[in-house]
Length: 115
Length: 115
Image (cartoon, rainbow over all chains, first blue to last red; front, side):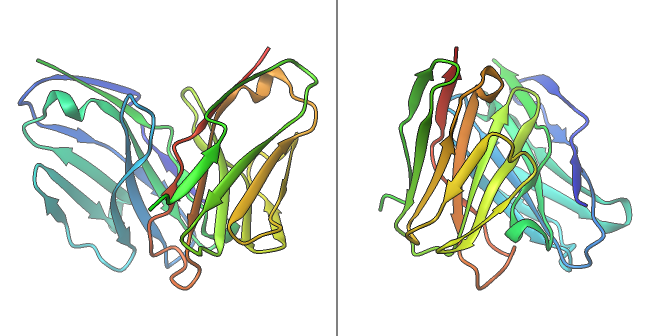
């Protein structure tokens, strides 16, 4: 069985602060894939990143960075110099080998960035 | 490019009524999924399909039926709607040749209220 835990339900920061969203996962698969999705107030799901279990290299994309650590089963997401437009719900998700490669989502972290 | 289109976008039903949600994709994807999103619960898999004519149950299938008569369409049916089925429903699709190593493409969601 797969499980994704996002312990932070809500986070509130002031613009320009850095913020890290935590994601811890459980799986028995040796091959799996980790994702982050963003859901802005408009409601659509926006794909941010995909990582496979064999690639622990951290990734940076503009103000976004991701830290994947298999030793702690974590895939954390950091936003540097946050902006109001970053306000959204962020979901961490995992794909293993079951359920036709369906996504197993965490419960999400609601991020509010205030001016 | 339409991508994944969900119909309708909003619907209000009375308890006991039936309805069908339509998901259509124009990317020739083999895999299709129905998820529901409830506050504080993330997205949970209802049913999925790995190809035309095939369907399977996900995490929360009770009260729903699905059909995949055509490769591009995946229908989600509620035979007798219940207030507990008030939710936002998302459809997604993906190719089969890379397993989990690809992002799923999501529709914009259907907001369903059962009174």
